[in-house]
Structure formats: structure tokens, C-alpha cells
Length: 326
Length: 91
Image 1: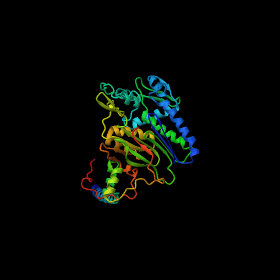
Image 2 (image 1 turned 90 degrees about the vertical axis):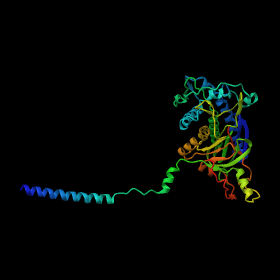
Image 3 (image 1 turned 180 degrees about the vertical axis):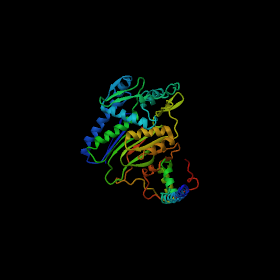
Image 4 (image 1 turned 120 degrees about the vertical axis):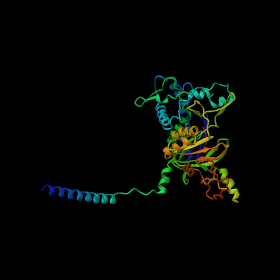
């Protein structure tokens, strides 16, 4: 197995592929180049990025690249599928919460000055119009987009497709949003460690991913102080403020990484009711949530994903262990 | 003549009523009956909406293994016998 690991998009990129080192060298180079191009296109921190141009064009038609059009189309579909809990038009709310520069810059200048709590504003993303014939996007005036998470998922998918030309088994992770193609020889699945959101050095479980996408949303990775308030980057579109959540992180498996990313965000914001509703609606979807004490909760399907040691002999549960806390 | 017609009509109506009842009884007797309530089917219907369940962490496995007297719990079984390098976390 060959690995490549580097920093881009303010996160860690991991690439894994099976095959000859020399053959994969070109594939790895292409992935690095593709991710650099995508960062220049989808970053909201670069004034010359296509995303910033799209936001500046709100109120008029914008001629988009095929990648941007594709991504916006998926984002709109996923916003509807999640009843608006996934909403990329929360950029203004995110900026009001203090996330108006890169997370590294925020950490350097934290605590940020206190800010007034914004009034909830109904999303107008649904009024966005797309013209497939010309790859045109019309954002309603005043609507500003942040494609951060879903763009990472989309990039992981496309990079995996790129690498699949060089290998029968590969995986790409963009800060935890992962796409898989094939499985390593002799293995039933890709093994992925689920990081402890309370301590990035800790591992809570090993997940076995076979295909499709896997994404995690967390409220502990990107946090900062605004005045005396602890802020994070998961905005609840219903309130326009950082979401008040019941879990620290949610990991979702779905046929596509973009969908996994959107569902992870929606479930983290909406909690167990939304999670079980989505899992009931989409048969391929599974999810695992990390409770504040580090214990895990998930759907029945997610138990098939979590690695269980072969020789494991469960002990007879004690009275306390047998109590279902959910 | 009039009396004869009246008697014939009464007889015909009686026979038609009896025949109708017999036909109705036979029809209902052979009609498809509703399936009896099967508890397992009821459970399938109610379990369409998934529920959340506790999932064991690596730490749970380690602690349970220690309680059972195991010297160590085999954590990873991949062919390279290495800890997986891919990891997922909130981006």
C-alpha cells in the first residue's frame, strides 16, 4: 500500500492506493495538482476564486465551470433532501460568528471581539436557478455561499476517480471526508480510524468502509472564542448561529461522499430524530455519533461497519451496563 | 286467474329470496379472508424507522478483554498487521 499525506484546504489530505510505487507516483502527482486547482476554485478566502466571483455575482447570472455547476446542483438537491438542515448559504452567519478568515488566522487572533447575535433569516437558497445548457447559476441577491464541507467531499470523490485510472484500489481523505474505490487485495474493506473528537490523538473505533463515501462533522475541530462565547463552524440554518448539538461528532456512510458530508452536518444539527428519519428514508445510509462522554451511538447498520476483534468474547453485562441510556 | 297470478308471484319471490340467501352464503364462504395478525410482520412494519443503539468503542473491547482475563485484544487484522493510517474526523 502506498500513501501520500499533505496539507491543503486548511486540512490534512490522505491518499492511499495499492499497486506499484512507480505507477502510482504519477497518479499521486495528479491528485496533488487537482486538489491545488480545486482549492483555488472553491476557497472563500481567496478573492480571485470562482466561489468568490459567484458570490459577488449574486443577483445576476454567473457562467460557472462544470465543476462548480456540478457541485451547486448537488448542494441544492441535498439541501432539499435534508429539509434545509444542510444549507451552504449560511456564509454570512458563519462570518458573523467570527469565521471570516482561515481557521489558522482565527486561532492566532482568538479571542475575537464579541458580536451581537444575528436575527434568524429564512434561507433563500431555494430561489437559486440553474441553467444546465450554459452552466449558468443565478444566486438571489444577498445570498452568499460557503461550499467548504461539501466541496471537500466532492474533491475526494473526483480525486479517487482520477486515481482509479492507476489502481484497482484507492482511497482519498480530505480532512475526514473520504471516498473509496475497490478494496485492498486480501482485505474485506478499508480500515479507517474514527478519531476521538475530544482528543485528536485518541481513536474510538475502527470502521470498515467498502465503497462510496464516508464523512464526519464535528463541533470540536474548528472552535474559537468570540467575546466570552465558544463558537464552532457548524451553523444551524434555522437560527443562523452555531448549532446547539447533542453529540460531539457524527460520521456518516453513504453512496457518495458529498451526500455523506451533507447528511453528517444535518444529523449533527438535527440530532437523533433527524438521524433516524434520514436513515429510514435512505437504506444505504448509516451513522455513528460520538456522545459528550466519548461513548458511541449508531444505527443497527453501523454495527456492521465497526470492526470487532475476531477473538472478542463479550462478557456478561453487569446490571449497570445493561441499562440503555438512549 | 288473478288469484293464480298472485300465488305464482308469492312463490317466485320466496324462491328468489331463498336462492339469493344461498348464493350470498356460498359467495362469502369462499371469499378470501383477511390474514390473521402475525406478530413478526407487525414488528417489521414498526422497525422501518431505525433506532439508535450503543456501539462498543475500542476502549470497551479492551476493558472487557481485561475483565475476561485476555492478555491483549487483537485490534487490527489486516494483512500488513498495521494500525490503519486512514482516519476520519470533523473537517
